[in-house]
Image (cartoon, rainbow, N blue to C red; front, side, top):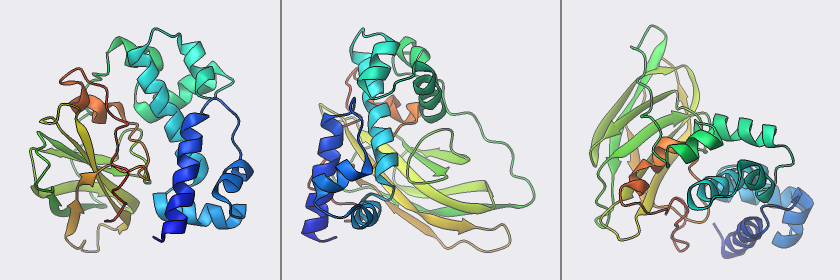
Length: 256
């Protein structure tokens, strides 16, 4: 990733974050990036793994989660603050992405029920196996590895496993299809927990085709990583009562 592309995408993501309640179009983003909208869309996808519109939507829901847990602002006002004109649309989008409604998320204090157990693998399903690696500075208590439709950790993963630390993992019963494998953890030894992420994909999974060993290298979440929306992945952040799902290491680049 060249510095010009990185700087352009950085400007746009920061502009998004500062104007979540405003109507932001692809033309607005392209002007901020100082590229044509077609070129901008291509470099944004290359840098972040998702489209500018998907990234903006994820930022809005991430901010809504923060406001629900750190303020007494009504759900209706929060929906407008993060750019939704309809509370119904906001609530529906929040539930499908986070896993619970905005009101439930607030009532649960960020501690949603555990991810549901997955069904016993059946015929016509493949598996993913490999190792997850952590940098020396990361001391996680648990790592969640899930299979998702794209680069955003939202909704319930089609399959998932939870491991206690770095090492081997196996995800069985993965339906045939094209999937992304996303891993997430937090280092709770830091006074403000730092989120670590890893992503691999798209992977074509077929039950009758062997899958190569998959390595996932956890690294501090960067500005360019899409926000993690699934509520259960916030859980490590609440152990100390500290809100930190948005904390990033801007200097760390995806794939570094």
